[in-house]
Image (tube, rainbow, N blue to C red; front, side):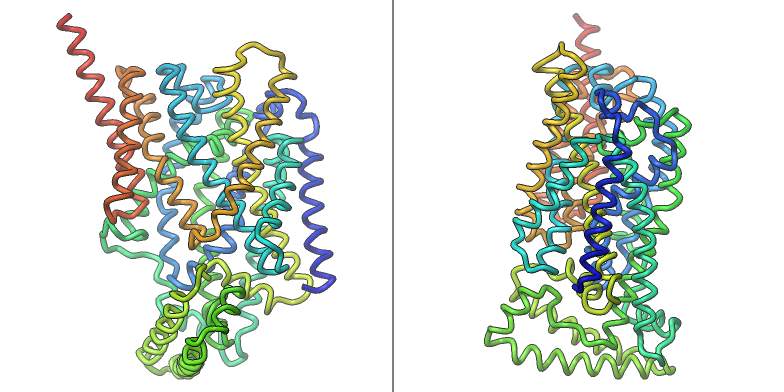
Length: 545
């Protein structure tokens, strides 16, 4: 990091925080603080939704995922356009017409207080865990680049998030996300251009495509049905659709975005923008990871990308032999790649790649931390020009701030509306509840900082955050499907359905190898089945009394 990099990094941080505070001015009522007075245009909602997903995890872990496993993770998003269309037709008009601050308020209108409370607890637990994992990503960046203690980096990043989220509310979060999303796209384009530009002069872009394809890094679609496989066409179209329906239809961090819309039509347009753009953007991010892989075919990569673990490994007795085998495998891979690009067979290259993978796997077993989250950072900090390093790191920092601020804001909203106001202080002035919202924001910010310190060992962060969500989303989706479409089901049926769905999801996760995307379908189906059964039994009991 040069002086110019530091200037660019902190300049961007200062701009985004200041811009968010400026746009969030006037948030001096509960309605303004939590829903922006329902004044948000469709493009701001859509870009904010995308920025929330395009967190630092996207930069750090998705690119690394493509480097080690190819582009098949893109299948995870195949269900998103389907979910956006369904929600635009169902959840958006229902929530708007209910005039609620949170999705869980609607559950009490439709069912009863106990169902609302149960789903509120599920949301707070699940989203609270997710917020901590999301905040861990930029802390990894800071700890790698600066060598600072991990806990210190979480405090710094968390403090910035708390500052403008507690002051400006959802309006500050949304408008900061708009700027963030535009900068994200610019940074992505820069990273891809430089990865290709830095290839050897005799390696063309088409050669890079050929090499990435031979290594299996461009395999985006897997049509083989395997319920234990995490990413294939079927888990993407079915399991992902249920996950996206749950995330955007029942998670307050997303519902709150389109509740800020000027109208039902504006909120629908915001979701449809996300439907059209998300899969191409995710494909593009994964493609960057594939091109970084090709770059490291010709530029010698470290045995481990995690620098702290690499230094520790260098002190072990196993390192000299591993390093020698690694260098030999890398030389063999590069030679095979050059032959292949000139028309030779790809078998030698694939065999050499397997040797590289084998050595890295052995080194990984000796490491205490997955290095997937460090691959893109290694490329950025070692090979990008001065100034651009600071820019891209700044974008990564603020991307995490955008994601965390939205989650913390939604957690504060639910805590104030569904817990504090509903159960502890039903009557009070608007000023009192505004203060309570800000206190809740600070609380959840501090909670996220504390939990982030436990997220380092979660492996690939992009998978960890989605696994956590999938443990809870199935039952949450199920209860809203019951609310929307099972008109005869009452609160007791919905309540027991949620409990059964949650218990089943935990059991499947604990005792079976079924991939986590299917948890969303399983949990939802169980909720529907139990709610229908309890409702039918209750009706029969009523008829015979």
